[in-house]
Figure 1 (cartoon, rainbow, N blue to C red):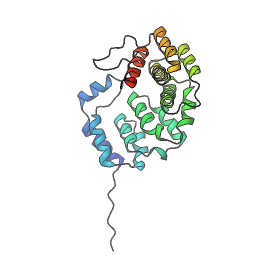
Figure 2: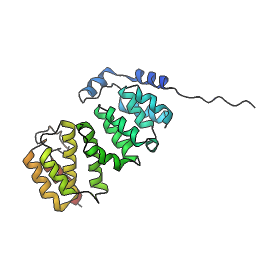
Figure 3: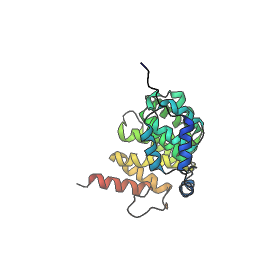
Figure 4: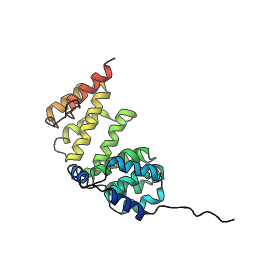
Length: 228
């Protein structure tokens, strides 16, 4: 009996599909946010859905260095298949904001190595890497705060957030807000820190959106939680 030939997709074929999806207008918009690609994210997700998880394609897509290819790899991968060393290396190569965000949220958070990576990244001297540690800490504040020294986190935020590089500052501010939202006993202190530091106080916020300024963010989210 003749065995049917299995059709496989190659990295080169996927890269060609991504190139065909490139849109100069989308690239112009994305570049304003530091993301150097021109593929509509809806179309990128549709491509990932069609291709389905294929871990064997992930290394080639990632090593291409192409931002759209890396985003696609993060949608197609199996998070539990990565080693701690692989995830650490990928984060350190992720200088594009969207790639780092998807790597942390779609892959690292589902990895068995998440807590070890959180601890290692949190104190890393590279502010981009440290921002990932703070992002994972914000997640723990909400979902599993036991074991976290929340007052000590507030001490660190109060001492260092004002002068932190932008991406690290954003991540620290997120942790500040989550501590204030989730912990009534620390809420006044979290709001006070935000008011004194004034980080993101003047950030332009569209109508019907919540300001990232921590005192406003905390107050609004607590109001929503407490409104019947």
